[in-house]
Structure formats: structure tokens, C-alpha cells
Amino acid sequence: MDPIPFARAQFAITTVYHFFFVPLTLGLSVMVALMETIYVRTGRLIYKEMAKFWGKLLVINFAMGVVTGIVQEFQFGMNWSEYSRFVGDIFGAPLAIEALLAFFLESTFLGIWIFGWDRLSKGLHALAMWMVAIGSNVSALWILVANSFMQQPVGYTIRNGRAEMTDFFALVLNPNVQVQFPHTVLAGFTTAAFFVMGVSAYHLLRKQHVEFFRRSFQMGAIIGAFAIVLVGLSGHSQAQEMVRSQPMKMAAAEALWYTENPASFSILTIGDLAQRRDVFSIRIPRLLSLLAYNQLSGEVKGIHDLQAEYVQKYGEGNYIPPVAVTYWTFRIMVGSGILLGLLGLYAVFVVMGDVYDTRRFVWRLFPYAIALPYIANTSGWLMTELGRVPWVVYGVMKIDEAISPTVSGGMVLFTFLAFTLLYAALMGATIYLLRKYALAGPPIAQDGEQGAESSLAVVPQPAQD
Image 1 (tube, rainbow, N blue to C red):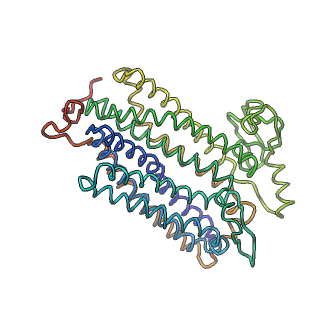
Image 2: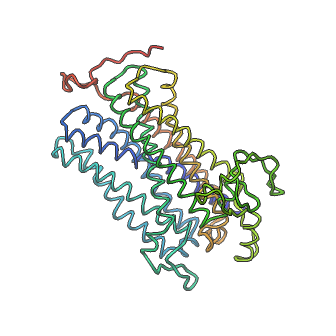
Image 3: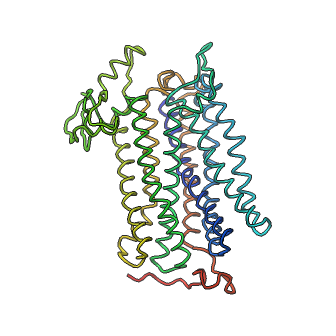
């Protein structure tokens, strides 16, 4: 039994579980820090209660992210020991910096934030959450520095059969990092913004804690609208970098079998994967060249031409990634982003026009729209990683060279099933807790603590259709 498919599936499923929680932490930590900063600057207690409420959901989400992230690193030594041996001198540096600097920073200050209410001054307590937000996003930077070496290896040399770092700053300034990090962080802001808007819309539909969730929705709408626009722009830059550094991934994402100049963009392609050709295709002329080069002409290489080129460069083999998966995950990601953009524009319209009581059928979409960023994040990650097949380090090391020689298919199958079931249970518990506390709303203020500005004392009412 070949262990490679199960080892790949195990790493993929644990990463999907892990990345389900990471983007929300990246964005929500910043939003909670902003809420508490407004409280410190204005003294308005409603923002303190907002920071507490959304901060509680952040803590629940953060805990699951830590649990799933730790197991990922163990897999490098268990299932992928040849990969670890080959790139350990390079991969170890950013992962060590991430653990010793960023992770300890965010986890330590998160503990201070949790237990520091009414023990620290207001300013210091808000600073603790800013350190959590900074630590979370710096952590993402170092993880992406490591991942970018797999996508576009730089600053290394091969010595005694191992990759050794020759230029640390080349690793950090990798062109792939420069486009991947902004895209990931902005996706996190989008995830958090639509999470906040979705939960807020649920309560506003039921006229519960109206002022509290109106202000939460406002912050989510402003951040979400800016973030989703910037996600699209950074994704455009990422696609242009992909054309330059991983042209086969772009060709697979567009089901572009033959080189075109100018290149057309696929709206819908149904292909014959056995014959490696199109059966039916709807394409927009010149649009792919425009996306790739910001002009209406420009060559984008096709799958067949790249396969022939790679055989000459790297030797005999199949260098074509799973085209159908790469093609459709790209479209799921883009489609989800377009829907988020439309909802983001509507949310800004609601906030600017103060029309919270109109078009209730549209408002019902926002709680369901919480799922859209997660769909986009997951499909984007799958497209990024599967589009690199057969390489684990692009152009340097193939997947079948990275597997541990001592693990059997049965061993990896067992751990794959065990991790999948265990993580499913943990994810179910986490989603249950997030849903429970999100739907419960903030605690109702006692003795008029909030004053007239807050709706925390508003008695919940049933929804009126």
C-alpha cells in the first residue's frame, strides 16, 4: 500500500482544519484591539463590552488554532522525514522564529488580556490585545516565509544532498512572500469582518442589543469592504507572480492546454482529462493576458508546452498538476470573493444610509455569508498547494522524494483516519462553542451600568417578519 496518498491526505486535512481558524484570529484580534482602543480614547463602556464579547469568541477560536497547528509540525518528522532532512537548515529558521517570537508573544499577551481586566490600566490592557494582534500576524509572516520557499526557492545551495541557506534576507524578501502575505492577512480581515457582520445581523434581525450590534456591524462593514477590495488587488498581484514563477499552476487554473498570445480567460471549461483537451469552453478573449501583464497582449504558456519544457529541464516525468481540482478551486475562491464584494458594498450602503430596517430578506444572507470567507480560504489554499504538484519544493524536490522511508501505507492510513476523526470532533466542539456564545449575545448590563448609549439593557424581542 503506497503511503504517499494517505500522507498527503493527512497533511491536507490537518491543514484545512488548522486554516479554518487562523484567518479569524488574524482579523478578529485587530478588530478587538480597535474596539478596546476606542473605549480607552472615548471612555464609552459599550466599546469595552464589545471588546469583551468579541474577545471571548477570539479566545475560543485561538485555542483550536493552537491545537491543530502543533500537530502539523510533528508531521514533518513523521511522514515527511526526507523532506525535513533536505530542507531542515532552511525551513527550521522561520519556524523557530515563529514559535519563539511570534507565537509566544501572542499567547503570553492573550493570557494577560484575559486575566488583566480591572487589574491593568485601560491603556496597558488595550496594548496587550494589540500585542496579540501583532503577534498573530507576524506569526503568519514567518509561516509564509517557510511556505514561500516551497513555492519559489531562493537563497540556498545544494550541498551534500541537502539544501543549505546562503542568504537569509533573500528568504525573507522572497517575491512570493511579498504577494502571499498581504493576501493572507487581508483574507483574515475579511473573514473576521464577515463573522462580526453575520453575528450582528442575526441579533439585529431579532432586535436584540440593537445599539451594541449596530456598532459592531458598522466596524465589520467598513473593515470588510476595504479588505475584500484589497484581497482582490493582492490576488491580482499574486496571479501575476504565479505566471512568472509557476506558469504550470496558472495554466492548470485556466485549463489552458496550449500557449496563447493574447491569452483568453476561461469562464467555463469542460475538459477531457485523459486526452488533455477541451470538450466545451466559454472564454473571454485577451482577458488572461490583461490579468497577467496589465495589457491586452502577452504570452501565457499552455500545459502541453510546459510539460515538454519541463521534461527537457528536469527529466522524464509527469509535471501536470490535477487540472480539474486546480481549475475549480480557483473559481470557487474567485466566486466566493465576488459574492463577498457585493455583500460588502451592500453593508457599506446600510451603514452610510443608516437603513438597518429595510430589505430584511437581504439581512438574512449575512449570517449565512459567514461561510463564504472560509470557503474562499480553503479553496485558495488547495489551489495553491495542489497546483504545485508534483513538486514539494518547486523545481527542486518532488513529493515522492520527500516521504519517510520507514512509514507504511497502513500506518499512515491509521493516523490519517485518527487525526481526521479527532479533529472533526474538536472542530465540532469549537463551532458549537462559537455558536453558543455568539447567539447568546453580550451579558445584559446591571444597574444601568452602560447608561443611555448602550442597548445591553434592551430586552430581547422575537423577530418580526
